Amino acid sequence: GDSVTQMEGPVTLSEEAFLTINCTYTATGYPSLFWYVQYPGEGLQLLLKATKADDKGSNKGFEATYRKETTSFHLEKGSVQVSDSAVYFCALKNTGTASKLTFGTGTRLQVTL
Amino acid sequence: EAQVTQNPRYLITVTGKKLTVTCSQNMNHEYMSWYRQDPGLGLRQIYYSMNVEVTDKGDVPEGYKVSRKEKRNFPLILESPSPNQTSLYFCASSLNGASGGNEQFFGPGTRLTVL
Image 1 (spheres, each protein chain N blue to C red):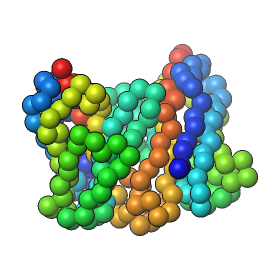
Image 2 (cartoon, chains in turn brown, cyan; image 1 turned 90 degrees about the horizontal axis):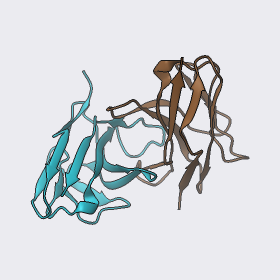
Image 3 (cartoon, chains in turn purple, orange; image 1 turned 30 degrees about the vertical axis):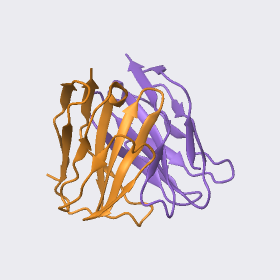
């Protein structure tokens, strides 16, 4: 079946550092890929998405490129802020699976001054 | 404001006492879903609904029931809760279940503890 693997957290960075959170997936067909963010005490919010190979999703300074050849969708940000501290989830939605999102286990990011 | 609401936000109960967690969306979405979030496991789908009166099992449906009598509401029912259902529950909705790129909107979560 479909699966998503994320790097283990927590990830601790200083403000203005470069962020990479790795995400790889296993799926048949041509899934759509997503990054969701969960701030403390809140539900998940869509951060960015890509629906086909080589698409780049971007939002709030975050980017991720859908790489079919490496089955990856790594999240990057050039300069993190304290307000980016949250849990980040990589997820996929495959065709024909009735909108079911398959999530990774989440990566906690802690940004310090 | 477009949103998904859940109630209650926090609930502590005892084994075997039936409970219902409500979920409502005001976006006229066809698709709704319940997930549970557990440490180290991410979010796993419990049940989903493609439209009114259409529901189906997700990956972890045991011990749960749902209904979809109205488009906006999708309650999650635990007939006889057990401690292994202690978890953080999220309801989500999207415009429809067909399009792969449709964003799912999540509620704020319900933290359930079963003693």
